[in-house]
Every structure is written in structure tokens, then in C-alpha cells.
Image (cartoon, rainbow, N blue to C red; front, top):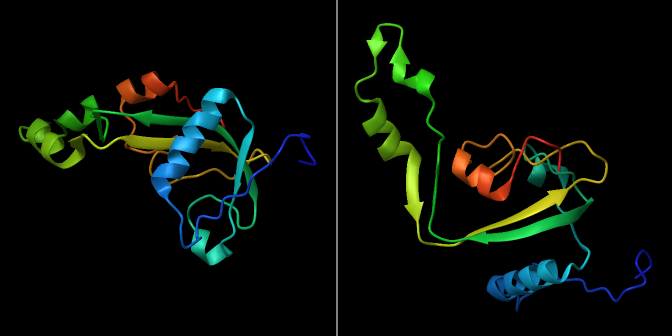
Length: 147
């Protein structure tokens, strides 16, 4: 309330009665209403090591999205099809079986921004994640800009 003058709410993710689906519906609703939202980490550095997140730090929530019936996986690259000795005959079969999965579970994504402007999430669904296909990246307009 100090920053915006608007009512504020704190949601503890470790509460005994925490309901992830209820929280998600509220986040989507708040996002659609244009409410300013933020989140914070409370883990010690060791718990966040290698993720790009900062311990005991606040982040702006820029966007909340839910996608249905999407295909995710490693974006196929043409240079992987060619080998030094010629064509990789098993490339498409292997790439299809190992890298691409069609899911009917909704994909829930939250885009956050570090107000410091440095240190960025670097796991699944980060800007450089292999889970992004060109189609998904275009649909969500996820570029390489710093969030």
C-alpha cells in the first residue's frame, strides 16, 4: 500500500491451506484487470543457486498466461540434420521422439522482471530455453529482451 496507495494482499505459498489452482485463477483475473503485481523469493542462496533468481528479492509480475493444447520441445535446427559425413538419417525420428511432446495439460507461465535489470531466470522457459519453439515464441511474443 505504501507504493501504490491501493489495497495489497500477501499470499504465502507455504500455507497449510494453499491451493495452487485457486491462486492461478486469481493471478489470471488480476492480470486481466491490470492490477500491479509482484512476487518475491524467500529462499536462501543455496536453494536458488543456478536459477538466476536472487534470494530475498522482489520481482515485478509483467504477465500471466495459460496455453492449451500446445506443442513444446526442442526447436529443430537444420544444421543438426547435416553431419560432417553427410545426412543424419535418424535425425527427424530421434528429434520427434526425444524432443517434442504434445501436452493437453495447460501450460501456465508467469513473466517476471528483476527491477535491478540484471540476473535473469535461466531454467525452463527462460529466454534461452530449448522448450521455446518458434511458434510458441511468436504466440507469446517472447523475444530476447531482458524482462
